[in-house]
Image 1 (tube, rainbow, N blue to C red):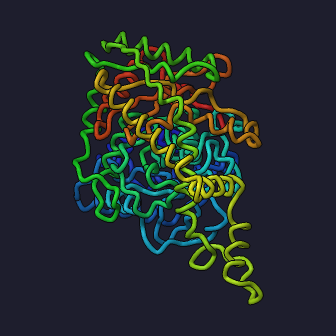
Image 2: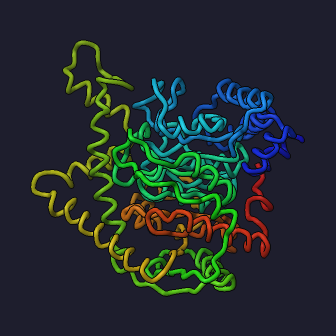
Image 3: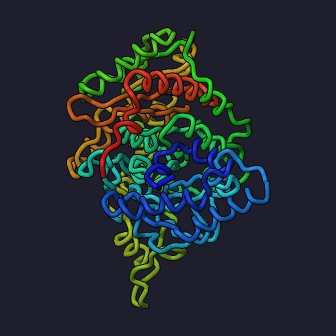
Length: 499
């Protein structure tokens, strides 16, 4: 097979061909490395490409197959890893100058599980600094372009991972989702992204932004590929105190047997209205009608506290950020500025943070520190946590009536790079539909549901399931994907953007 044929294969197809001997893992890895070399100068999906490391992993997979050892379901499949997970011997920057050049001495649990499954890690992807942003414009190393239109954003904070998928630089990727940073990039690039139940995927070795919200998860071009990756990375981890000690839901089985027949699907009235692009609503309404045709019962829901989610999130997340980022003081690791013998430790810390943190990170640290300060804690952070409880109760009430909830993933399609750079509030609104799920800890997925007619850019359909019912996402997602492909063709696989 030619390189151009190989990079268009799904992860499931690649694994099957490697296991059968039709392709070698080295062939597959070299094809994707060649693609990265050919297009990434324009896309800028990667911050670091680990060519030698990837080829070594690929050779090990081929050696296993030659010895007759059984290969796992993703053995030899290349993957792009968001630069927020530690990787032993490979730079981890979190998109920030404050960790530029830092080489971790250990692997994150998620990284270990990928390696144990013989997944080939191609390198580390670009992201908003410390995962703070919705456009990947806050990266200290420059923005990533959306392969559908390189002048537009690929979403954030995991825009590098989503762009790598859409540009055929990798068939699989890993993202993290604090307020929508897996699902929103998936929506605007025509890919699939899943935020598992909070605590389902270990956070050990994942650089923290907001500990009660952060969650790693799978990114892919198909629902089945996402399910196969989900199964590899999920599971209890004693090194993570927030890890759930429960079996991984049967996500792969659900993805292989997608159906919505007899399911109750909720549509929340708060997830539409002012600020939503007409083409996004049009494609969403068509998706709801498609679910009805497939045998689902559509139920209208009212979740009034969802209107307060954005406000609550932008108090809780910055508060936790101000606490987590206190460790970056210029004294222990990473950047150190002003340590010339003339400055005190406090001055070195101040100078290091001034040079190392970008504007959005500084903004959120200041917001969070203020919200946690004496005299304001109850009025701001405490009140936000009460709203979080109300949102969780709204979800609980909703899931008594329905099996899953659907909504647009984002209010608009990908916006031009720079359009919202000087308007933080407009940027924050990109996560309007995704934030409630993070606050409640539920599972959610975004998958493509067509192109908006006014700009011919991808639109995402969000599916939300109760905590620990992640398999419902894949059951519904696979049914929608199959019906969509039959009706209109896959928006990425058949109408791929040109680079």
